[in-house]
Image (cartoon, rainbow, N blue to C red; front, side, top):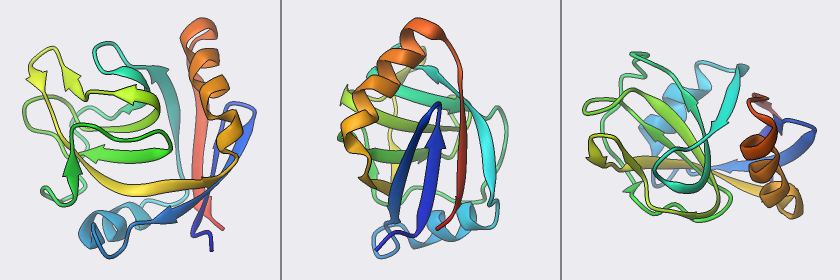
Length: 137
């Protein structure tokens, strides 16, 4: 069952909210739907793309947080040491910033379209920012 549709660059993915493990983050994110932005390739974290959100405040703390999201997992860093951001792992990620190691709330997992995930990451790396949109399924 899909909760959200994520359209990133030319690709479309179905996604499941991690409601049991990150209920506050899921609820906060749902209040912002549809959510649109641009993904750029990460600088320090490995194989991931991120949406820089500056000082945007989702009003959540840490829950179900990880430094090592797996491919297809989406995390929200609620801000603090570095700016608020959403990160999508497409390969190996060790979540960090210029300030050092970070952890973010794993709140969303892609469930279909995964065969295009690596291609999306490489497209973002070599061609630049890609549009992304999160909406209810």
